[in-house]
Amino acid sequence: ERVAAERVAAERAAAERAAPERAAPERVAAERVSAERVAAEQAAAEWAAAEQAAVQWAAVQWVAAERVAAERVAVQWAAVQWVAAEQVSERAAAERVAAERAGAERVAALWAAAVGCMQSG
Image (cartoon, rainbow, N blue to C red; front, side, top):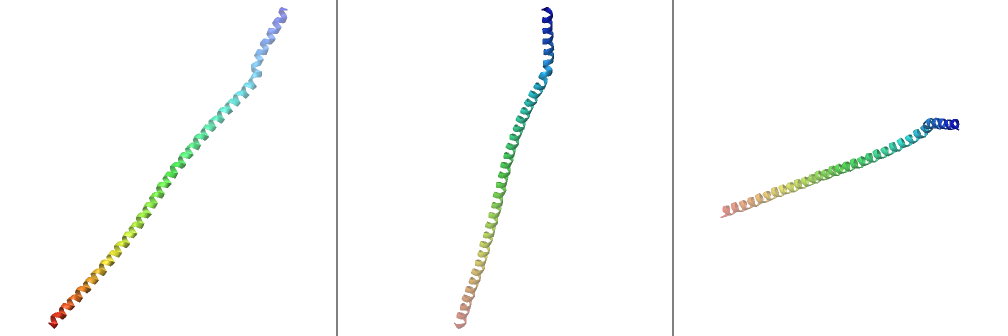
């Protein structure tokens, strides 16, 4: 019995020593699955961060484009206002010249009338 017990103990010890060798492929596979899961989670987190950065960059670009467009509109509006002011100024100058001419013609007519009255009288 003692020999059988020793043999069973020896077989058990041998099985325990062999168990890590048999368990090694399963452990390697489990570690690989775990590493792949960690890598996938990390890749997903990096993708989400990159996506968020891209959205933020797009928002910044949109705001910048809106600002440029608003500045462009403001510049165009100022140009329109300047042209309108120039036209008003030219029209006022033309009206002033016409008024001066009309005034000069009236003065000349009055002067001619005065001279005519002095000559006849």
